[in-house]
Image 1 (cartoon, rainbow, N blue to C red):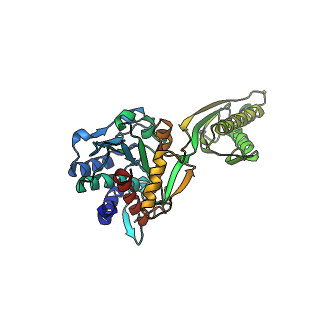
Image 2 (image 1 turned 135 degrees about the vertical axis):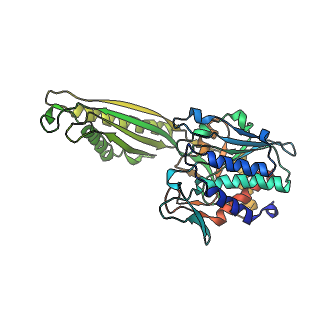
Image 3 (image 1 turned 60 degrees about the vertical axis):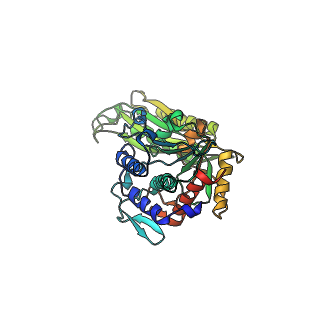
Length: 392
C-alpha cells in the first residue's frame, strides 16, 4: 500500500488546507474546499452529505458536518476515517510555511491550525488517493466534524445513520504516528452565579454584599483544600479550573452579581461528581460568610452540564487491534495512550462507535509555537491508506 503514497501531493494538500481560515462555527470555506477537491477526484454530489448540526449548537454556525460515503469494491464491514475541520481563533490569519522538517506559521502572532487540519488532510488525502489509484477497499465513510474545539458539537449530534453505522472508526487528531489513543477524560461545564447586594461603595459599603468578595472566598477555599487545579485525593485524580469571571459595572458600586464559568475533568465519573459537589459547597460556605451590616446574605446558583463523557477502549477491540497492525506494517512499534483532553472519539465511542485517535504530526497546538512535524504527518497519511484498504 505504501507504494501508492505520494508525499509531494500529500504535503501540497496540507498546505492548501492550512491556508484556509475556519474557526469553530465558521467552517464554510474549508468544507467547500474539501468538497471541491473531492468532486474533482470523481466524488458525486449524491455521495456528499452535509447535515445541519449547527442548528443544535449553542454557538450557531455556518456549516454542518461533512460526510462522504463510498460503496466498497468488496464486501466487508464499513470503516470510517475522520478529523475535525475547525480551528481555535488563534489560528485566524495563519500563513503556513515549510521550515526544515516542520511546517509552521509565517507570523509569530498566530497558531498554525495543524490541529486539526493535519488530520483533515490525512483523511482527504486517503480519499483522493483511493479514487486516483482505483484502490480496492471496503465500504468507507470519510467524516469531517465541525465545532470540535468548543465541545465536540459535531460528533455529539451527528446522525449515526448518516455515517453508515461503521464498525471500525479512526480519528486523526494527535502527534506521534506510533501512538493510538484508546481513551480520554470526561468533563463537565460549570456555571456559578454569585448573587450579592448592591450599595454605594463610598457612602454605605457596609450595606452591600460583594459578589466578587464571595467568589474570592470560595476560590481561596478551593485552592487551600486542593479542589482547584490538579486535584489529587488518594488514588483519584482530576482537574478543576474556574477560568472566566464576569461582574461589576462601576467601581463605586458594591458588585451585586458575578458569573463564573469553569470545567471539571476526571477519567472517573464518580470523582468528577465529587469535585462538582466540593466546588458547590465552597461557594455556599462563602455566601454564608459574607453578610452586610443588617445580617443579610447573598446566594448561589450552581449549574453544570456534560461537556463530554470519558471513555476507555479494551485492547482487544477490533479497531484497536487493526490500528496496531497498521502501525506495525509501517515499521513502527504501536504505543497505547490515554489522553486528558476531549476528542470527537469521546462522544462517538460513548454512542456505540468505538473510535481510536491517531497521530498526524501536531505539536504545541493552540499556541503560536504550533508546528506540524512533516515525518509524522506523512506517516499518518500512510496509515490512513493502510487502514482504509490494506489491513483486514
